[in-house]
Length: 288
Ligand SMILES: Cc1cc2nc3c(=O)[nH]c(=O)nc-3n(C[C@H](O)[C@H](O)[C@H](O)COP(=O)(O)OP(=O)(O)OC[C@H]3O[C@@H](n4cnc5c(N)ncnc54)[C@H](O)[C@@H]3O)c2cc1C
Image 1 (cartoon, rainbow, N blue to C red):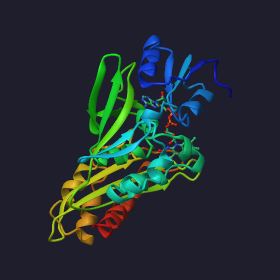
Image 2 (tube, rainbow, N blue to C red):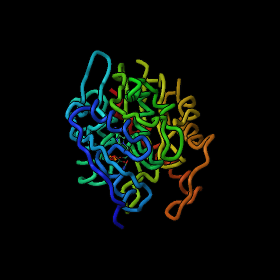
Image 3 (tube, rainbow, N blue to C red):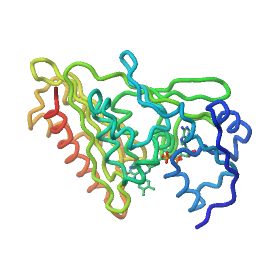
């Protein structure tokens, strides 16, 4: 289908983008990579009257190491994250997640900010961002505020972004000490979206036991979530096969798993357990 008619503006700065958005709170929408919004417009699920294209605002695209933090600009593409040598060295979960997304065209255009703002229940970045306890910096005409990832994702396609706000930056505390990370998914064969996607960060003690675990899950519920019961079951163990098997049995605790034509609720829950186990084993093997 063809989208309904819309106006298109390309602001040169973030301030200009904020003013444009404020000028039409009901009809305007931010356009980043366009790889979720344009399909939605073609299906007429979204009918904005004004698109504000922020993908060309250069100051919104970066990956930086600053003191104990990693700073990522909202329009940084999936490909830039996937191929960042800095991230491969200090936070490999992010490149791992980026390279799992869609195909090369999607990764070249799609942005981390667009993916987080869209909050697709099968999107990959929300699981990684939750696992890393990221902070999201949101700006609007009333100034800037910082939101923790765990309160940013509210529900299906719904975030804490308020009318007139733009996601500007993602902030992550640099992983320290002995740790291992991975992102693993079962991609839908047609779209590449996560039927199940599991992000793992293991923090280890010097004696080889698990100090703490962070496990983000996507594709399984209406929004990405932290598998807290798995995390607490792993902490303090030696991550042997028994400890992992006992822990992953809890990956769907407290949530209602999605079922659809491709994967029933039971099958999806089973996949979540199998791939959480594999992801924990991979992260353990990568501990350094
Ligand atoms: C064929 C195909 C396969 C795909 N496969 C995958 C996959 O495997 N995994 C996956 O996770 N995703 C997948 N995607 C989605 C893709 O990753 C999108 O790029 C992403 O979901 C949205 O990012 P975007 O930059 O394209 O955002 P856009 O489509 O431009 O915007 C999406 C939404 O976010 C809003 N928005 C964008 N940026 C901001 C911002 N900075 N502040 C506030 N609001 C903002 C927009 O207004 C819009 O509502 C796929 C898409 C396609 C077309």
